[in-house]
Length: 145
Ligand code: TR5
Image 1 (spheres, rainbow, N blue to C red):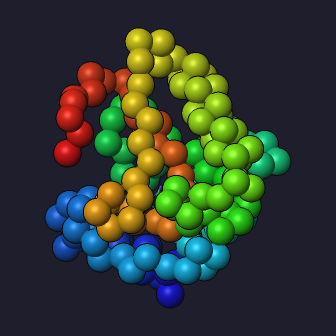
Image 2 (cartoon, rainbow, N blue to C red; image 1 turned 135 degrees about the vertical axis):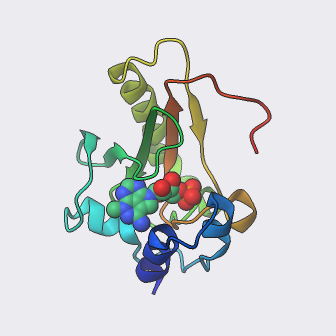
């Protein structure tokens, strides 16, 4: 259900904004599959920019900046979002951020970039498999919306 709902939220033309899309998704069980499992398993195509045995980085299908990449763990291990983090996730959380830094270098984002982790409905999270957004290639604004 979460796969279908997250996919629907992203593909429906009546969704006017990221916020509406996020609010249309019911936060799923921590281990429930999402559309990202299909991307990891290459059942759905994506533009992969970095991959190792633990982490996958691919271009966001709805980019919010000239460079917009998602960095995700291949094994979710209960990390549907940052709010579900436990001590056993220390290593993978560090790895996600370090990979974001490597990908930022690879993308030539030498003048700076933005890292975002949305969490829960009020954080506008729409896919319940933890992911780090890497945004760059334009001037970012503060505060974020
Ligand atoms: O809103 P949050 O923080 O949960 O971010 C989820 C991100 O996943 C959004 O920026 C979406 O644009 C992105 N997304 C959603 C789908 C998708 C994707 N990025 C790449 N490829 C995707 N496919 C194939 N399908 C999606 N439903």
